Image (cartoon, rainbow, N blue to C red; front, side, top):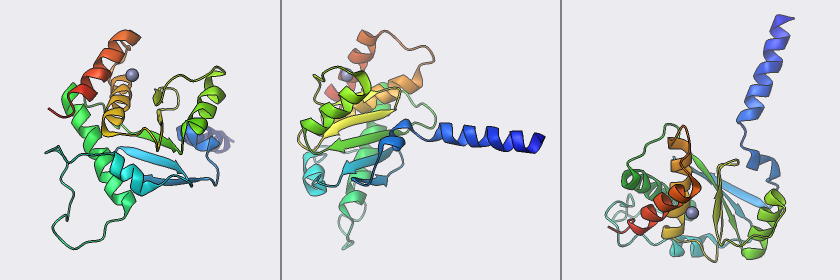
Length: 186
Ligand SMILES: [Zn+2]
């Protein structure tokens, strides 16, 4: 009997670990994971365009492995490397290293998908071109607007939310997130 209760409790515990976002994912989504990110992208999203829009050529913190070797990396591999590079750069900028920090990134083709997701969660119209939601630990963005600066900004929100035991006021969180994307290219 006690064992059965244990199994039930364990099941509840394991289920509670599955990100909420996962429930709403269906076959329209593709997925890949890196050290810091799990990316869900809609089937119609052009990954090569996504990769071109995230431009880290200015940086010395992103050194793609094997650039000089003749190794064929998939676009997902390249994106994983870039996302992790931005995430750890933002941790450095903020000097915040929350343990087990990991974020989900949902990439929609365009604004319509993004707006539908926002309205599904908040039941009010969306005004942002990208956003991060603490409750789902997810960045919501689109193929059209994604960039290294937007990712740095939204990743900063995730890092801030995981770093503080008591969250600072929203205005302070926003200042810190802006600080991260402004200083990405320092
Ligand atoms: Zn913000």
